[in-house]
Amino acid sequence: PIYLNQEETIYLSNILLVLARQLKIILITPLLSFFIAFIYIKLYTVPIYISSAKIMSSSGGGGSQTSGIAAQFGIVLPTRNSESEWVYPEIIKSRTLARAMLNRKFDTEKFGLQKPLLQILTYGNNQPSVGIDTLIKAGVGAVAGMIQVKKNGSFYDLKISSTDPIFSRDFAIALIEELDSHQRAYNDKKVGETVQFIVDRISDTEKKLNAAEEALKNFRDRNRRIENSPSLQLEQDRLSREVSVL
Image (cartoon, rainbow, N blue to C red; front, side):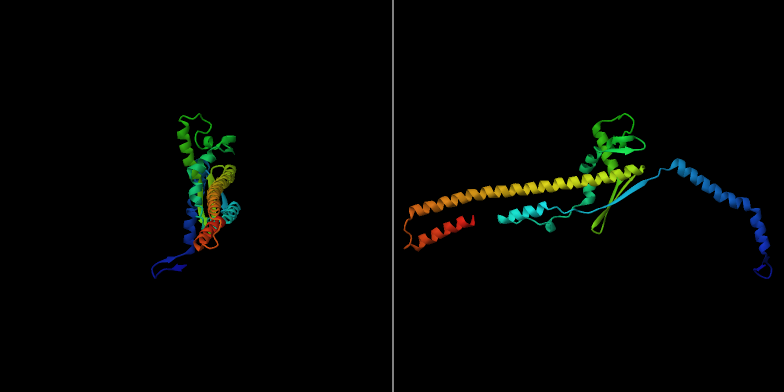
């Protein structure tokens, strides 16, 4: 017995008797709750599959090679360390990258094999009821909604969410490929601009060199004997030095 005070005494047998009388309720309530939750999950919820990846900036040799070429002509170009850091979250969620992704084709359980991403994310197996511009706008928003990217130290954590596990995986792979292609195109453009800058500088310098050589030749033609003229010697040294510099 459990003694509460002088007037009340609770026996363990009484507690067990009460529990026995409510046994059905005690057992049925959690089972019913579990059954309702199971039915709700199966019929009214859609599972979300997440594909994860880590990305980091890749270093290319094009910039250093171009810098070496430029250095031979006395042109100092910014090094990799002085370049601004790539803002990967903004690039990955940009409209440019999303539009590139919409042209990709994927396999899905719901829509079949090799369907364009634009079709998967917008009109599915139905006929589109709006124009292509509206579809692209909706597709770009859907692409951005699937992507989560967050910086984690020197890496970026990339997560792709969808209702199809294989599609999530393939989407993550395709997105990284498009990001790599975008970065390569950007680097090629910057290298091309730098090379063109060097070519223009070479052309300008060549013109100045020709003019300086012509000026030196004309000076020597006009002044055959300059040994006794310090001013003429200084002028010849100045013209020669300009040719050497160029």
